[in-house]
Image (cartoon, rainbow, N blue to C red; front, side, top):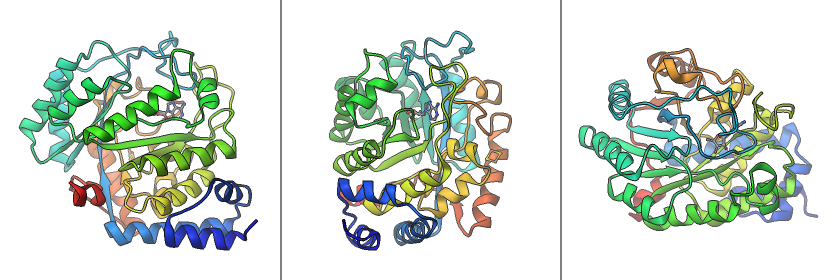
Length: 353
Ligand code: 5AD
Ligand code: FES
């Protein structure tokens, strides 16, 4: 096997890496190599985006979900979850409030809630775009048909987040009930790209049963899909799920993978996630220093924050959006970066479209 320096050099200069090489990097991770990759990755991000960090205002508009993913706190089988839905007016007001705070991307995230029909969703998308034409609208509402995705796109939605969760079909089956499949998940992602969405995929780090081989396949899946956005964060157990007693994903492994992903997909929009900030108080800052360039604070009304409870001990559930914006601005500026009022599109996508 080639030396680790050779692998990381090749990755840094070409963005290419094989399955065996990823596994080798994972098995031979040291603080030294981690530091080298973080420096190279953050330099690569700065090459394209300078010291800018993009913000996305996240509106968690419903925690009703028809699915029963074993890891997720809002799974339909969790009878302890207090369910809520924001009204269409509340969602649009929330977006306008975010606009006033400087957000130029609004992310509408929710469980797979049948109440929000295609007509209701397109109405919401149109209303936000009508009031704020300079704002990007990102959806994160799960698996739909090609036709539905197309209707969302035609209504003005710009981006879509749908983590693939794990590329390995066997591993996928260990994390989800039998009615959900990795195959359909991946079909959705290719449909989204074909329609023209800036598309985001991703996975949890340290999810139950995950192996280094699984992670290698996840990274190669990302390389093949070539998404504009990638979301990764640590798995964190939730008390009312099948995986309540599992341990959380490791900070350093998430950071290492952020660096590798940045080097594999140089222009990718890569958030330092709330889950990363939950497992370590400086998680999001460390994520930026490892190559991430996006943060996604919560815009949902404080009254419902705690109820969008995907995993235990989630941060920022008591703070108003304006407080999080200020907090993030100072955190980011302390590490030499700057939060900007900008749509923050993937520059490769902008050039190609
Ligand atoms: N820990 C960390 N991330 C989780 N997600 C769902 N449940 C958990 C958990 N327990 C992630 C999934 C999903 C995204 C919205 O949140 O990857 O795609
Ligand atoms: Fe919410 Fe710091 S980002 S309190």
